[in-house]
Length: 107
Image (cartoon, rainbow, N blue to C red; front, side, top):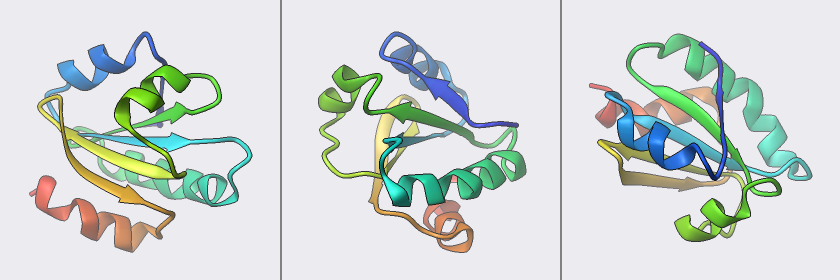
C-alpha cells in the first residue's frame, strides 16, 4: 500500500470513513525532516496494509485543513481513530520509533 494523498476536499471523508486508524503526515516540500520521513512512511504504509492508512497532507497545497487542525510545525504526524484525533507527534522519527509510537493503536 502506498501513502494516500489528502486534500482539503477529501480529508474529512477519508479520515472519518476509515474503519482502521489513519496516520496523517502534515508535510511541506521545503521541509528537510519532512522529506526524510517519506521513505519511513512508505515502509510503514506497506507493512501496515489493512490495519493502518498512511496519508499525507501538503501544507502548501491545503492550508485550510492544516490551519483547522492547528498544525504549526512540520512534520507533524496525526493519528485518527474513528475519525477523532488520538495522537500527535511533532518532528521526524525513524521507523522503529514510529512503530513504537503507534503500537498501542494497532494492537
